[in-house]
Image 1: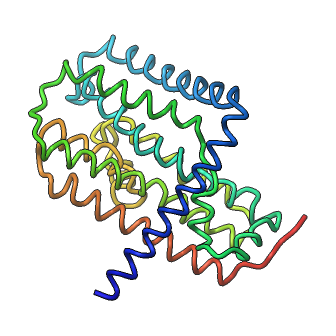
Image 2: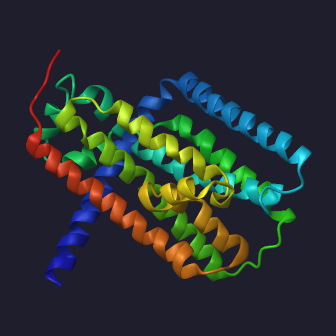
Length: 273
C-alpha cells in the first residue's frame, strides 16, 4: 500500500507540473498566433497530398490486398491521432537529440527539482500537431458510414485505450533514440531514422513483405500504433492481441526509454560550442 500511495503521489505531482507547463505554453502561443496557423495548415497540406495518392491508387484498383479504400483511410486516420498526441505533447525530445545536449543546455534540467525526463517532455507544446489530430479525427468520421462496424461500449473503450497507449510507443521510441545523445552529443539522425518507420503505420501491415511487416511489429513496433488496434475496431477480432499486446508493447517501449535515459544521465558530460 505504501508503494501504491507513493506512486500515486508521484503521478499526481507530475500531472500538476504538466498542467503548469501547459498553461505557460498556451500564454506563449497566444502571442504568436501566425506560427500556430501556418504550422497547422502545413501539416494539413501534407496529409491531403498523401490522401490524394491513396485516391489515385484506388482509382486504378478496387482493393489493396483485400482492403477497401474506406478501411485504409480509417487506418490512416487512426495512425494520425496517437502520432499527433505525441507530437503535440512530447516533441521536445527532438531538441535533446539535436541541440540541447550538444550545446550544453541540458545542464539547466539537472539543477531543477523535477525529474529530467519529465521536464523535457513537459516543457514544450507543438501546437501545429493539432493539424494531425484534426485530420485524423476527420478521416475516421468521414469513412465510418461506409464501413460496417459493430459498435459497443467495450469496443469504443478499448479503441480509446489503444490510442492512449499507442501514443507512448511513439514517445518511447523517441526517448530511446534521443537518449543516445548523452553518449554521442547528437542523435537527431538516429531519431529521424527511427521515426521514418512510423510512415509504414499509415497503411495495413499486410500490404508489405514479411521483412517489413516483422520489422514494424517486433523490432520497431509502430504497427501497434494503428494497424492492430484498427483491425480490432474494424473486425472485432482477437482483442487480446490487437489491444492487449498494444498496451504491453507501449509499456515495454516507454519503460525501456526511461531506463536508457537514466543510464545516459550517468554518462552525461556537459558540452559547449
